[in-house]
Image 1 (tube, protein in one colour):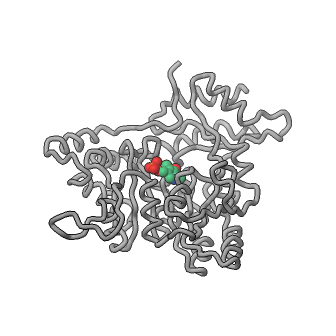
Image 2 (cartoon, protein in one colour):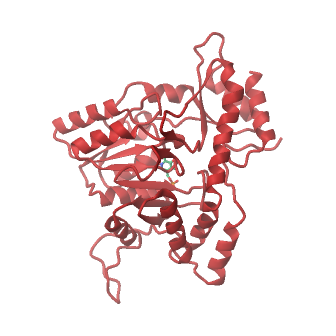
Image 3 (spheres, helix red, strand yellow):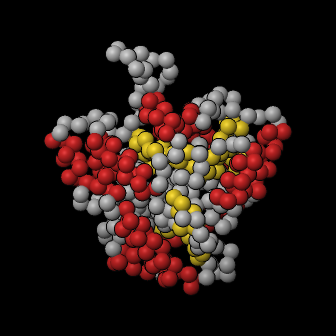
Length: 373
Ligand SMILES: *Cc1c(COP(=O)(O)O)cnc(C)c1O
């Protein structure tokens, strides 16, 4: 039985032409025409005025925190329901993460809890330097209320749009809704450069600084002169070539991922105990992954693990939702503002195979297994 992956790379065909061009022109370096071209493509697509292509989304988050001036001893508010890469960079800069739980509608940061956390941290004399907000599985967060709260307290938003390239909130691209945005092109994301990321912003100065820090912070001099600590975080021109090819098929990838969601929803929502997350008005999700809640409390209903294991036995990969950061052993000492939502999502939630390269037969096979449970 052929393996069905959760979300595997899906090349469009033109990637290899851009990569070949890098070879024939000998631009095998972390700079070159593909890097410039990929940055321009991302800028045109998202509407962000400036883009720095980097080696990973994690590197982009790290530089983002540095550029927002986060220092040892500061605190950074971070959505608890996310992948660890959203939170790890907070510790790279010596700051402390403060985790905030989710709301039911989008599964992203709960605005009321965010405000409570800000008030309480400030009352304790803490320095809050940034809010890391995530658009989980491609679904935009509640930007209206969150932006209002962040503005009221003058705290910048670092938007982790690693899973949300192509998603929009009120017609604006995810990644362009905060002060700084982060994208990822890891192998499992909606488009990939094998590994890569980007930091995006409207402010030219901040992106110029990001490029400077990402290339070892070399001052202008014929020799190597440094007045700041630098990083080696630039994207390779070979990888950027893959990215340029992937940009040509991004719209089609979004269309296919959204079709996966519709397929599952049409066939599985009459199951009674399987629930889907709809888009509120004005929200557009790229549906990077189709996620479902499997409510085992319904009469005679199956639980999440029963579904996951049944799929695994048939060589089909599915995965529980992200385990919240406030429940991770590595962050056990971090302050957290919780309401039980992310913990329940983790207990009942499952990511179904969602690749844009799934065939109709693959989807039928998956649905059939779940329906017979
Ligand atoms: C993938 C991902 C990242 C990290 O991106 P990399 O390019 O793998 O470093 C960060 N945050 C979220 C929410 C992600 O899903």
